[in-house]
Length: 512
Image (cartoon, rainbow, N blue to C red; front, side, top):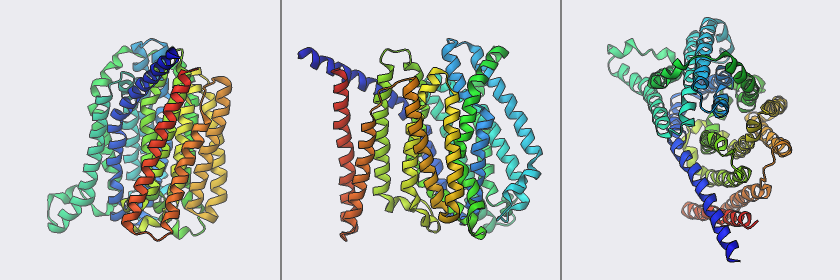
């Protein structure tokens, strides 16, 4: 009996030690992802007050297209670098080969997009008065894509070396510069021109560019980030291994297909919404409203993104351990409860969080719980994807994303004409829930991990019940102060229940 208790305590301490290590890495990466991206998202209140709904729709549409092109610019080599760096025992040629490949292809793609920008500008002209500048917007965007792609492999190397602090510092500088340039062009310059029409500012600022300054600010920040990573670029001298490059491409191309199809799942709604709504005159307005309210799910999105940054190298490093699969299962439990807590927090305090966006955009608030739950399912799917990355069966990732893309396309075409942006939100949720479930069952066949599906249902169910309790209490006509006190109490119930549940799970595992 004493041995069982001691063994239980040992596994509990080991479990917490492993999770603490992962949480520490996640926290540091959070400086560049959660904190940094949160700072970047603070531009949304500026955009939704400086631009009208249609103009912000243009910004939303451009970044939706950029999401597709980001996948093409890196074509799976970021994950391939992690895989082959492990299998090749850290051979320097792995890094230099991936870096040379991405730099070369980025320069070529930038040239193509810049040359074809006059032709491509027609795609973005519908419904906007910014038509004369669209070609220039595309050139700036091509520069953003190229610079970001060239930094992808150096950033991956920093993650692989656990140099999270340098990773975070460079990312934060990028965020700070982007915010600074936006404030300069959208706030300071217009004020300076009004106060002094003969000011030097008129040589760098032209009011007619409008939303174009959003793209210019991003381009300048990306360019400076590339310069900051020049020390990492010097390792390119290890040379280019064509045989290794072909192996990396074979590993990476299914990930590119999966990523491309994944972008269909993630951003296709914002690309097609202007073309599918019943009233074309409101198309960009609806897109702007949907894009702004999408930002209110940022806490979930940023947590999932930050966790992915930290977990991918962590999962690969644990793969050779005897209890690796048990570690993956326990990490999943903590991840799901964390996501459910974020969902509950946002929904309980949405009446305050809504002020993050301009008043003209708040008619889209009903999409927020749908998108939060969709991103929770996406996070679980990304956790599940470790099985095909570890086994090298990356073609499965492509199949899952293609299935999701088909669901997304079908539901968007069916739902947007009748439901508008609400249809786009429901399509996103159904898509991510479907590929999450399919990936789970297929993964259990090829790489069994003892995931606790009951924990998932309990976490999500508890969050929904507590949110429902808040809605019911509000119907009783309580005052604002009591409303916030009640919601705070409901919120605190969740982590207390989660802690008790997860600790019991850890002890049960240790006693096996």
